[in-house]
Image 1 (cartoon, rainbow, N blue to C red):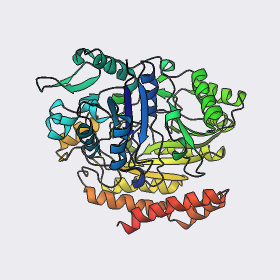
Image 2: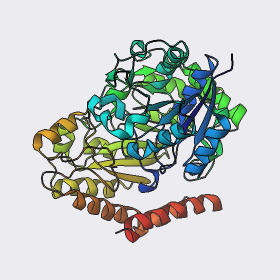
Image 3: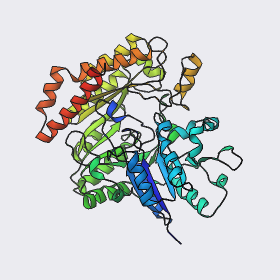
Image 4: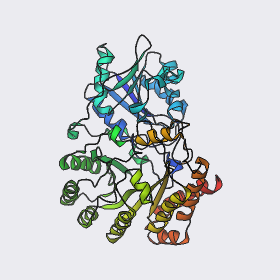
Length: 481
């Protein structure tokens, strides 16, 4: 029997963080956002190999390739299946890929994955643009994909496959029962990095290749705006330290990658696991550098001491609001005082900080938003990002915005940097965009920030990278209004 071929791809529709369903950031629209590898496609590729499918991976935006290159690949590879990673902001443009594919190979089976499918209504897919999509995956794709491909291979009833959305022979939209979250993450094979152009995904300051390592899934927090509870569940599911170390060693030994982003909904959630991992990195003499994300109330001296010894150079904090009333309303479970202490602790250990802030919640007045912007200026993180809150379907934020009557548009086609779907009860979305731009100018174009950054630059290459991000900021926040 001829081996089936599958092309897994990010479509040529701009640079977005497609590989992490929770995060759908437009890379060029952010202040310091860097492109990360499509680990989602890498995981799916490794899983498909287990059932004898030959996978190919193409990240067209990262490779600066166009629709013509996609069409050429369809003709050259002649895949039996297509798996596309979509984002909510780009989903309508993304569907062009399936339209082209059906014209080139009418029998090709098209599969889409992305956060949008977790919460969307079935009737949303009665739009004609979705006629070219055969199946959408609703869940963790690497757990579902083999069951789907085997069902197609055996001409089985797709309605028996859990975790998918499809149109049946009667033209009805069917959404099957969910596939339970996999609890033993060690059983998932490592991403197929042999199929990725690893040099395209770099550490933003030094420009060295940087791999993403997923250390856990799930988050027990209750933030009203976050998709994590839907996408990865509210129970913390951790990989074993040994399994993480094995992937790190593969990256170091086989791919010569020594820079990493440890991806988790909250990397520092389990203190014991963090310290065990750090100790093993040190014991194995891996000599790596890495960044991770955290909550401001899940770090302490002991954790940071081990993290710094093990190579941690950057901590990213979801600080969100500088107004404690808003923090309570969005159920963040953290305060300004904790944010101050977290940044202070990192400075003590020589770990850089990346502060993430979120404005545009329904209750917010201009003064409340200014509380956030004032906190950002006070904390003086090494990097800062300001998002405008987007009410994704399925979140509590969506329900609140709808009940307040301010939900006039859905998240489809919108992003949280330059094109939010809604404003607040007191501030228009145009004003939110203006306030974000003004705040970023204040944070990054500050002479003290520029001087502090230059002092710590260690190489010409690093200087060039900071200059490139600075130019991007200028274009986004001055030349574009």
